[in-house]
Length: 402
Image (cartoon, rainbow, N blue to C red; front, side, top):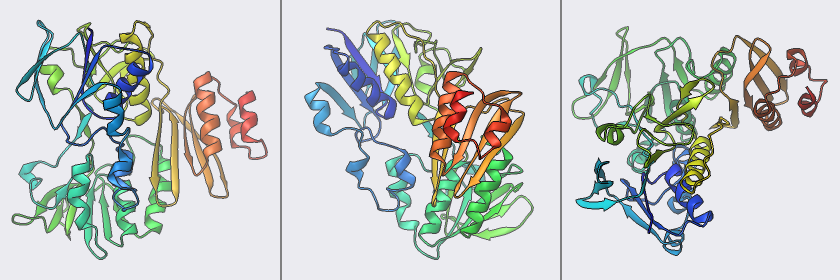
């Protein structure tokens, strides 16, 4: 009987398993995850779950009964320590398992502040897992002071939740502006104003020298010598793809676990999907950190294990919820050279990224119609004239006729 082993019990791992069974795969499936919880949604962790608006079981992607009913062997709270490609076996929790197909959905881990600057002090947190959020939950008390290191989406979402709890919030960003790596100045300006209006202090072009405190953090010293008090600190300084296991097994690594267009690694019996995997895209290679990509890539891998021989056509999309603002992003803005603004139209505004006359991506704030139309245009390879995009007298749906 064919045995598929999935290492990594997150969004991508869960999707592989469900797709295999949905396609009628009747072989053996084993899923191994380091966390004790079954596969769960990560996006609500730093929002609804932290706010107390969602119980843990509502985070679960599927019920425990699903795995039993679909004959999936779950090994949770277990770490895979080695892969032996020659014998097609792996070591997990002291047990040796054989596989016919191995799928690595090992996700990513948050970058931590260096121990040399106080990153190991108590009261310093990252936001990635259920355990991370459970550990920091007690810190969210009105009047407490939090310093958030990093002005990316993770840090800014944490800032929004902290303000809802009535905390004093300071965001430190080393770059000249928040979201510099991922968004245009127009989006940065919008999000900066949103946070400022809600009482968040944002310090851009501001480096961190070190964390202060003995045993537990009590503040931060900035690169310019200023010191800020802090009851706790959240580090939102990016993630690292979960490639260590693959690398130790001798698989090719390139900004994550290198796969071909079918999701195969450099070993034809081993596949990869999700945050940890890089894949060919428009003549280059990218790695996407999003729920949509994790699901789509995982589905493709499952289909190809079943012999479909399909190539992955990524359709990048992302979202971020901050206060009353829902930011939806379609496409990838890499290489843009101009921005077209549509709006504001009431609460809605969107920024359209172009390279020359080619539409690359859309950032839509409280503008679901703009997002959906932009996403469809990008997927169809169509680019409306920039003047039409900016003209609010033209209905958004009519841009699809471009």
